[in-house]
Length: 297
Length: 145
Image 1 (cartoon, rainbow over the protein chains, first blue to last red):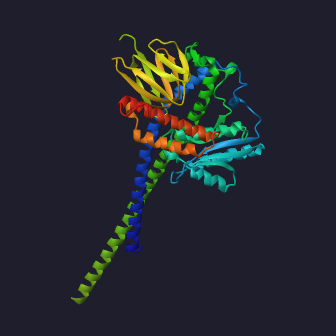
Image 2 (image 1 turned 90 degrees about the vertical axis):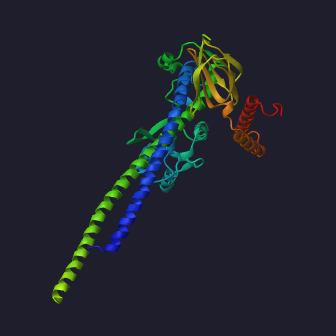
Image 3 (image 1 turned 45 degrees about the vertical axis):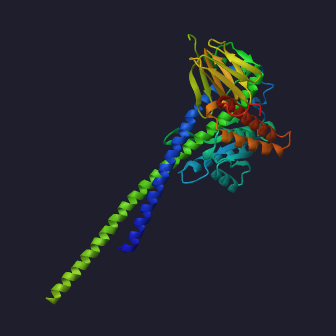
């Protein structure tokens, strides 16, 4: 039988672990709520920007003067990977990073070069350990505190890399939040822009449905479009960041809940063993006393 | 007042305004616009610093600071989609002052042709515009200073 003192120590440590994980679970769910309300506040902005861009895209003539739409022969692929700064969030990071690795290997197999832009310390450490070239690692501000201005910085860096020719295609690899228990690592094309049609290729029908066919544009379509474009890209980046952050917190909350439950269960089991051992000791001592007494009398 | 205009001001953080008003004038990229109910559909841009002057349905007026965005009129709804937007009363002078000092400090040490210079200049202009608006509405201080 395990010795009583040792058991007492283990029970204590398991209990304190449960306490810590419970606290972390609570912190994660609080942060989750915060990010979710942030995402909620952000949604109208995205919708408006999308609506406007769809409306203006119609009016812009041709694709010639919009380099962000030009499809080039791809020699180098850029990835923006968004993972977390901290661990203890279940399989959140490893799911994402394994998917990244797979995608990168596929690109390399096609003879393309892969470059990384990274948000989140975990992804940075993981990628550099595997010998991938990380072009830029965004540290400031931490993803937790990231606001739209941070997304702007990232967006500008990505656009810059694309327009300067450092990469011929830019993709975003981040976890999308589907539900409280489902997070999917996704690989989405960022540049050149495919989700919006320009000029002749514009999907006019959808735009016209929500926008009057005829409206005043001042100063002119191209100017407005060129101003809208960066905003649109920033919303895409910010959206990816918010989704990743939401997934991270939800994932951490789940992992911590699991850990707390496991610790509580273990504590129960240990207590049972401890009590049995204690009872056994008492019984043994009683028997000794009774035996001793009967020997004397 | 019979005719009303629906005004929405949307920023990445929140929807600042979403209510019926009598009219709005705002500073666009290439001049000042006045939007009254039943304005024709329109889409235009707002520069680094923009202001909006809102006339409420009861005749009262209020001012807002706007930055970097777009304005669209669609079916009697004016939507201002901006990166920043706040009512004059919400402007935090201490923060504005800090931002101004930081921007000035940055500007001093930068190459005038660099992107950083443009960025710092933009933040300085935003800080000054906020300051101006806040002073104008609270009536504190001298405008010309």
